[in-house]
Length: 249
Image 1 (cartoon, rainbow, N blue to C red):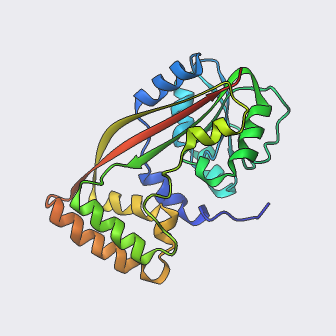
Image 2: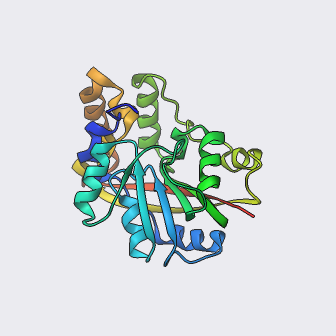
Image 3: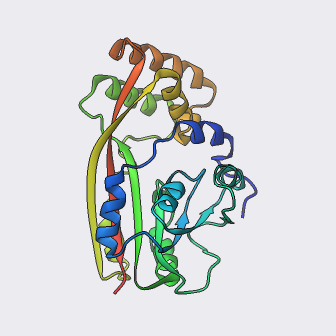
C-alpha cells in the first residue's frame, strides 16, 4: 500500500467544509437495509475524517472506520476519541467473513473497482446484511453560477468531466450477481455557507487541487462569479443525495 493518499494534503479543508448527510438518508438506509442502525455492526470504508462515521455513531451503531489515508484517519481519531480505525481499502478488507451487518461507503464508492469491492463487502457481511453506498452531489445544473463553475473545471482540471459520477451504480451491483436486491433512492436538500467556507469546500475536492499552478486563478474567478450571484457572500448550494443499498439473501 502506498504511504500517501492524494487526500492527505486536503485534510484541513475536508474536515472544515465537507457537508454532512441529511437525516432522511439514514432513515432510508434503515428502511432499505431492513434493520435499525442502533446496535448494528458497520464497516465504513473511505471514512475520511469521520463525517458519516459520527452520524452513524450518533444513531447507536458500532462502526469500524476504514480508509487508505493515515492522515485522514488521524483526524478522524482526533475528532472521535476512543474510536479505533483501520488503514486499508475496500478491495482488500482486513476482516474475517460474516462480521458486519452493513458495509458503507459515503462519498467513496466511485474510487473502487466494483466487482472486487462488492465481493469483499459480500464476504464480510452476515446473511441478510447490506452494502450501502451514497453521495452528496451538487444539484445545480439549472443555475448559471454552477454552470460557469463546471465549464471552468472542465477547462482547467485535467481529465475532469461533470458527469464523472453519473454511472448505473445499481446495475453495476446487480451485474455482480452477489446481491438478492438492489434499490436506489434520492433526496434533495441545500445548505448555506459563507464564501470563505465555500472556498474551503472547493479546495477539499481532488479535481480542484488537480488544477495545480492555476488553482488561485480558478478560485479568484469563482469568488467573482459567486459574489455576482450572492452579493451578501452567503452561498446557497443545492444537493441531491443518492443512496444505493444492495442486500444479501
